Amino acid sequence: GQQLNQSPQSMFIQEGEDVSMNCTSSSIFNTWLWYKQDPGEGPVLLIALYKAGELTSNGRLTAQFGITRKDSFLNISASIPSDVGIYFCAGYHSGANSKLTFGKGITLSVRP
Amino acid sequence: DVKVTQSSRYLVKRTGEKVFLECVQDMDHENMFWYRQDPGLGLRLIYFSYDVKMKEKGDIPEGYSVSREKKERFSLILESASTNQTSMYLCASSRVNIQYFGAGTRLSVL
Image 1 (tube, one colour):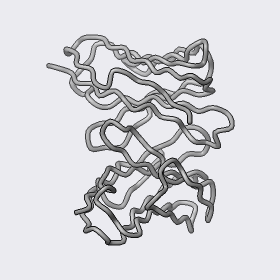
Image 2 (cartoon, chains in turn brown, cyan):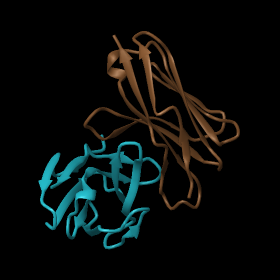
Image 3 (tube, each protein chain N blue to C red):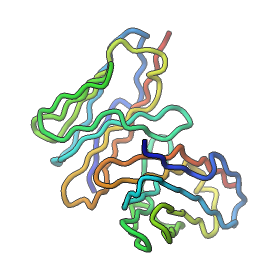
Image 4 (cartoon, rainbow over the protein chains, first blue to last red):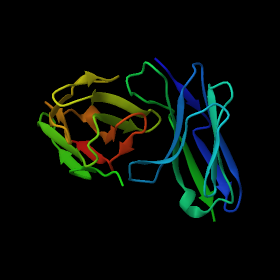
């Protein structure tokens, strides 16, 4: 089946630093989503992207829909301790019957 | 705001018990999903439903069943719980592409 690749599995950064994550696929996706999951909670949608090349911001977060439609990037600027959590990318392609394909997630740790 | 509510945050059950996990959404969404989440494996789809009384198998349906008698409610059933079903279970709903998740149920089977 479809797979989305996120790596590394864990990232450790210092408070105040910027961090970038990417998500890649061997297939074309029509929609890219980025979710964050706080410890012990369910994933919450951060950003949705619908068009190749689209760049969208949500506060300190910026995400881009790759031109090839096979990748997406999430950037977090000026990280703070509450940015800790698991960041998932997810993609949707036509014919998938509303099923999303998820990456395995990146666990972000922020050192004060 | 979309609200997806899972009936229990934590459950402890014994091997062989029948377990019901309940999920309710308040946005009149057609689609509902059940996932399990395990370290290193990400989110894996168990079952989903496009409409009342309809269900489709996901990637790992073995050992599970579901029920959708009303549009807002989607239940996951473990007919005979086993220790390898200890996991975090997440329910989600959607109208089109964006899925909204509940807070999760952490199930321990002893």
